[in-house]
Amino acid sequence: MSPRFSDIVEQIKEKGDRALTDLYVRYRSEFIQWLCGRLGCDKELAKDIYQQSILIFYENIQSGKLTTLTSQVKTYLFSIGRNKYYEAVREQRKVDALKPYEIDEEGLPEELLQKVETKLEVLGEPCRSLLIEYYYHKRSMEQLVAIFDYKNADSAKNQKYKCLERLRKLMRDSE
Image (cartoon, rainbow, N blue to C red):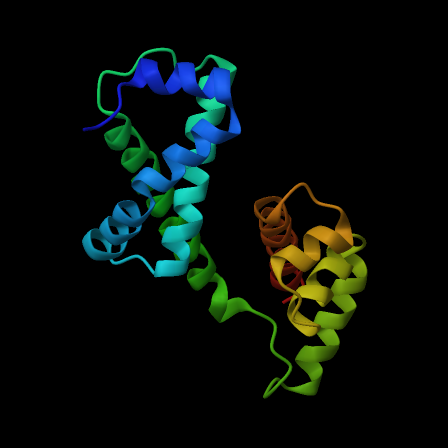
């Protein structure tokens, strides 16, 4: 039988971590199986999304944002997970759309490489270093977070995108 929302809220507020762990274990395998089977999600991503969903649920309770629930707890968690999955798919589509514009030294004419290097200098810091670290040194978003002291990987990704757009504009303006 599915626990009542009010019981879970009470347990989380009284027992804290223990109640959260119980909730986490209760739906984990079913959630991962559902996300992978129904939406075609990768298993590792499904695990990450489940953890995010539990944290969002917990934070919503602790902050007072979630005080009543008209659905079952399971339905609420799965809805959070579905939204997080679609968010991840949208982000991946954005990344895939940018791939044709990525800087790749192989096969580029020397003249174009020189132009890119010149425009990188004009671009200035931190964009210059960020793009070099990402494209030339092949740093991950997590590594960029550490190097440039960003809040999280999404912030690093957003900044990289903005810097790349500025570089593209500089390249177009000089044509």
